[in-house]
Image (cartoon, rainbow, N blue to C red; front, side, top):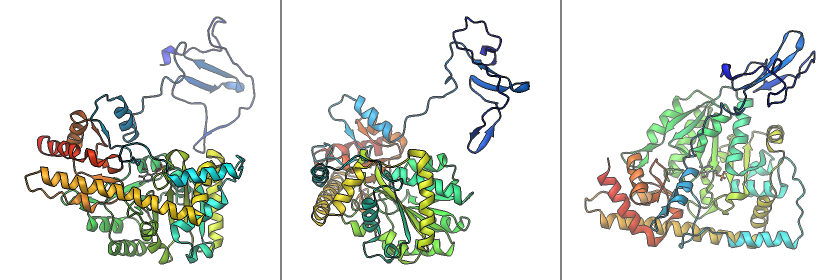
Length: 466
Ligand SMILES: Cc1ncc(COP(=O)(O)O)c(C=O)c1O
């Protein structure tokens, strides 16, 4: 690279790049990650401080300034959809992304969402900027939906709620708060977990390690492994928990197991950090799906909860969610909220209004709220039906006597099939079934009509590929 560099301070005027030379005696300081950069750099653009403050710029001729940028791998989840689109086979099936489809495998916009949008038009609501913390009406109803409207923690003002860019953005705000106020503290994440969790903590420079969660022998929960890993972590760690419908396994702890998890977290002075991306979608009941979070809150613990409305209201692209931090007093909550706002301001200034209004209109209106609950029951019900049909098809077709009942025990949008990477590849390459390589399939993308085909694909991959 060095041989390709041209020092513009001595370059001929015919050089195609403009020469910029300054004779400032003092230069503006550059900070990366809070550290001042003194003029050394990789890549093909260098700013050097010369004696007497003279600056020259060396630029590679005919080479992009971005030459040093390497190709990033495709996202393991969103990349599946891209591959699906490119496949022309009529039998193809996209079970990669967790997005709800109708029995006809079409995307679905909830009726309550359409009604809430009509209300916005009728009321002539504006597109003015929101405050940094988001829409007040949204923040109120979202905390109430999560913790229950009568929960004393809300009445006592102990919950700091800030509207986030859906589940991901809300997790990212919390991760930034951890990085700032708990330097060196570790976040424990389940093995396996949703693929983006590790990205979020890596990009936030928050150290993480995994706790055991999935037992391949039973295709169930490794509860003892989970508890002992949480116990073994340094005191005061953050423990990331999926509030319901664990992604990717679909395996949730029982209420008794949640109590034991809370015991250990309390003993160790850890801080629970819930990711609630599927409230209402796991059981069909909003309250039941929030019971894990409420159990921890009822113990008087401080906790973080990221929420998403991508799945339960089908607002995937509206990017609407929230981060809630339950604090020991209203005074602490106010300070935490102020810091979350301080983190959000330079990242995206303030959040989008459209999804926030939809949620506020639906959850805040008793009629629409009831209609939503019915629609959600229908969606959750359709997923339960395909789950049952897939189990029936596998059990009928597989003559080996293998027990496929783990599929019925799992909950939510996903099923963890237990297929390994090679077997998952076979599902895609031979059967045109698109899924993540960890063996996860999204049942929300499956129809009753396709269950038999999927069962054939799973049995072939399971028995004929190592
Ligand atoms: C466990 C989990 N957390 C968070 C999210 C965040 O999704 P979004 O950013 O669309 O709300 C998802 C989405 O798949 C998820 O499965």
